[in-house]
Amino acid sequence: MALRDQVITADDLPRRLAGLPGWTGDTTGISREYPVGWDAAVRMVADTGPLAVELEHRPDLDVRWTGLRVFLTTHTAGDVVTELDLVTAARLDAIAGSYGVSGL
Image (cartoon, rainbow, N blue to C red):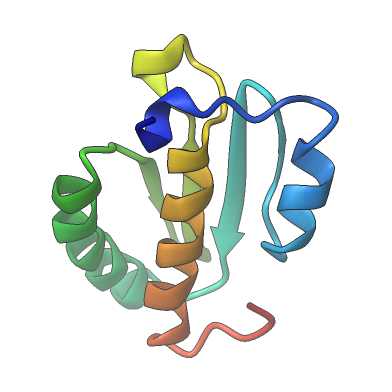
C-alpha cells in the first residue's frame, strides 16, 4: 500500500504528531512554522524541491520575514492526512535541522 493510501485517523493523529514536535493540525492537514530568517527560509524551500519530487508530494510553503510556514495534506487522497504527510514532515524537520532549527 502506497504512503498516500494510508490515511491517518483522528484517533491516531495526536499520537503520531507527538513524534513530530512543533507540528499541529487535524485530519485535514498538518502545519508548522520553522523560526528562521528570510534567507534561510528561501534556502529551505530550495532544499524542499528535490524532496517533493522524490516523494511525489507538494507541500504548501509560505516564506515570511520570521520563518517558513509549511502545510501538508494529501490532495490525491481527498485532502486528508496520510502517512505521506508524516514522512514528509519528518524529512522537512531534517532539512530544518541543517539550518540550525532546534527542538526537532
